[in-house]
Amino acid sequence: MTQTIVIAEMNNNAVHPSTAELVAAAMTFGGAPTVVVPCTDASAADGAANMGAGSILAAKSSAFAHYDASGWAAALDAVTPQGTIITGASPQSKDLAARLAARRNIAVVQDAVTIQGQQVTSPVYSGKAMQTVALNGPAVISVRSNIFNAATGGASDVQVLDTEGNVATSVVEFMARASERLDVAEANIVISGGRGMGSPENFSHLEAIADTIGAAVGASRAAVDTWEAIPHSMQVGQTGKTVNPNLYIAVGISGAIQHLAGMRSSKYIVAINKDADAPIFQHADYGIVATWEEALPVLHDTLKSMMA
Ligand SMILES: Cc1cc2nc3c(=O)[nH]c(=O)nc-3n(C[C@H](O)[C@H](O)[C@H](O)COP(=O)(O)OP(=O)(O)OC[C@H]3O[C@@H](n4cnc5c(N)ncnc54)[C@H](O)[C@@H]3O)c2cc1C
Image 1: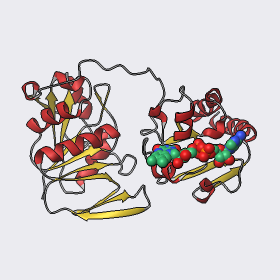
Image 2: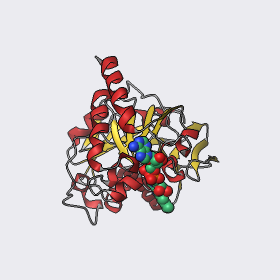
Image 3: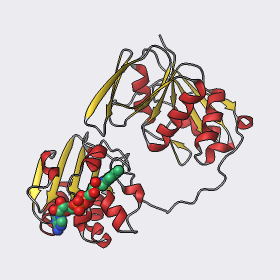
Image 4: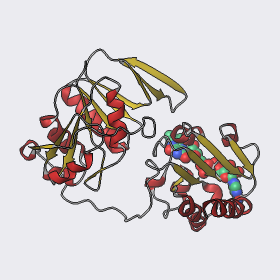
């Protein structure tokens, strides 16, 4: 049996709940994995308790205050046991997965959606095909969110390993635009707007619906490229984020292949577009042929009464 190690998903120096899904993915190899928590303060590793871990290691270094691929990979490589490593599939975690695999000279499989025995399946060619690879040794595997049911129980004791001395360079300050909003890559429901929204101000209609149903707001690349007020962090697609929510609502988005690459694996897709021939309708479970000006107020009122 391959020993498995999960690198905890971190958010603002706290263990993200999706780590429990990674533990469940690791368990498909048999046994409970070791969860390694990259942290500046070892108490953060307590957040990995009750996530099904066999053991919990707090990898402590000031380098973990802000993400930097080379610093994080060096610090984690020094304290992570040998074996198959599972990470999340956020852009940061996939970056880290590749770095760790390169440092250890082992294979990397990105965006896994199925693990059966030693066979790992992931989408390729912008989601147009699925690839299954057979592992014949340790590997680093990034696993998409909302695929595995979160593991529970397991270890709560934390072993602390200092990895301060293993880092040559680290990021000391990181300036980000403040946002209170849920990240599209983590949300169960995403409502995205495209160029058809007409202006960035009109995204307030999407935000109002998102607030009603607890959704994240995303955007097409055309919206991000056209309007400075729509940040790249909202972009869904080939050169943006890959999302895998239960419900994806595309508003004023044509459905270009590069957009589909980031959202086509959503469980249910709803499209609102004034053009009945828009390609997005070929991939939607439910389609509304109307302008967003007509459709969104009706949708919002209905959702508000459902949520009341
Ligand atoms: C290398 C590469 C990478 C790319 N990566 C990405 C990516 O990551 N993500 C991405 O999204 N795109 C990406 N693109 C761009 C992609 O090809 C499309 O140009 C883009 O997705 C189009 O965005 P859109 O659907 O918002 O705009 P448009 O194609 O302009 O479509 C707007 C839609 O809104 C509808 N509409 C207009 N007014 C209304 C209204 N009032 N109510 C309802 N509907 C309305 C129209 O009928 C139309 O279908 C990439 C392109 C390349 C070449």
